[in-house]
Length: 299
Image (cartoon, rainbow, N blue to C red):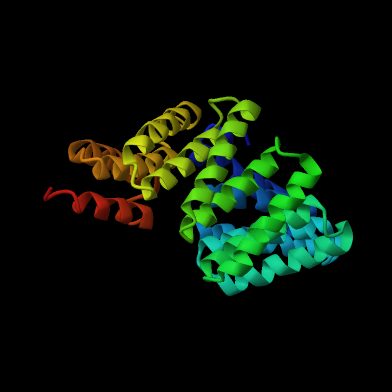
């Protein structure tokens, strides 16, 4: 996964395809080693935006592992959680909820209701409920996730920081902006101390806080946070990674709201170039950024 971690996803995908082919030839299509190769390729396909193919690989891997370990093994719950996230990303909410709740039942049975795997499942289910518009249920799952992670790992853990930041994002969405700001500021402060100022998770916390500040009508305060996030992402993944394009698009929004239309256009143009090169011209993310750019052309 070294190539994946460095953002060289297409190169990693070629190696992953080869691993799947070799796994099939050496072990056969019912062996756990072949399933592991499928699962690893699914991770890459998700990162590349090919969600349908990722779902296919995850589904096939789960079937193979179920044959080897049984349908209620905790490892199956982990794979089901991954599959639920893929389904969520494809807006297949009913299927995602079904997979996630099956994972939750397995983990609660094997690990108990206070285990971190249960928190992981609750975090995913909270995201699904959020997309379904079930705000009370989503908030309950996010709060419960944060409670479990805090009890098991304390305030200074990556698990707790993820839960805290995700709670802040939900609070932002439902309009509880002051609470969202408090939680995102805490996630950023602890994250910088725990992970260091150049970690990609810190870039996420910076962007999340910047988004809240924008909604609080303070785009000028958001801009330097997005710029810091951009510098981190470029350093970690290189200047032409889709993650960089996302930050550029967010920065462009803040620049537009602060009155810097030309600066916004320049960032969006670069984001379009990156996403088109990576995904091709017909990808939804490319069309979305192009639409944002088009909206500025008359300004």
